[in-house]
Image (cartoon, rainbow over all chains, first blue to last red; front, side, top):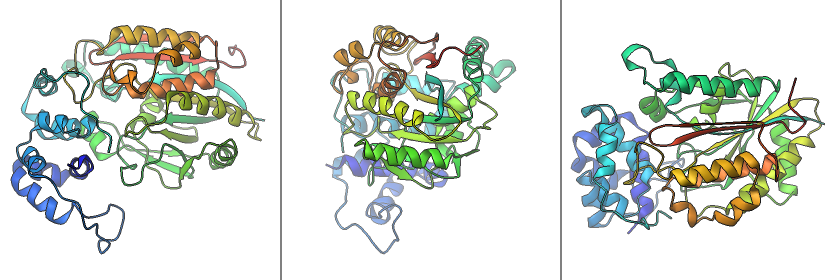
Length: 119
Length: 287
């Protein structure tokens, strides 16, 4: 399992307006494209210098494909990254703070200690 | 030598700008009280008549990322552009450009390294809301040059709380040993109890009002010893999963000094998190 790669997905999508929309509309296609093209791109390095070893587990792929923020939290993805991206994708469909509260309510069964987010 | 004109510690709330500038039906019911408290807080900075601002904050995965993560970093550049697309998107924060004070930044780097703080540096740093929120709240003109100091409260493994206090103490000594006739304010922002992306987020209050009460007391009375006795990297998970931002307050307690009571203390109980504002005048309150 690679918390780092989950975080890298959330980070690179969140900072790109086009990718935010693409992930909202087509999560399965976006995750497939991202893993093939972006997962092994070192940020701030020329594209020829690729990493050779990063990939998702099937569980991670599924959580991302299903926009499953609860499972991402339980996997130890960085909660700030997940929250920020999911607000960007879904707040617009709800009233003020309604999405943020529902997001927390969906995790009421999660108890302390929370999963370790260290990478 | 430079004079430390004021020490300011604050929460940073990215929704403040929108609350302050909203009108009519969009204006939240708590906006007027919030603005009044922030303006009174800003006056405590203005009274100190600073020439330069050292700004302690923490990048929220904007420019600093997990493939190359510094623990403490000084920005040394003639200018700092500010705020990022996702902050404009979520909080409505404006794009800004602030001037840098390179001579002080160079001094902090050299002196800090010589004091055994292995500081990272950046010559091209786009700063985020941890630094622009206090600029917007305390010095909305954005007219003073700054030196950003970034800490890692965000991507574990993190430095220990005592290291934040030590850096704060050193930062004060370093500012006071800067060969300059400038008046410097050190401003740092962090959080009280806070939960982001977990089950306790966006409640009616901060996730742990009891922690907040104790934290305000530690800060207001300068009780570094008491704070360090209770706060650890492990304990900070309990008040809320983003509460490690409290370590930036601990850094500022280090700047202010053990036992130093703040001259200005104010709080505001908001939904989601409590706001808290503190000002110290190391050389006595200005007239």
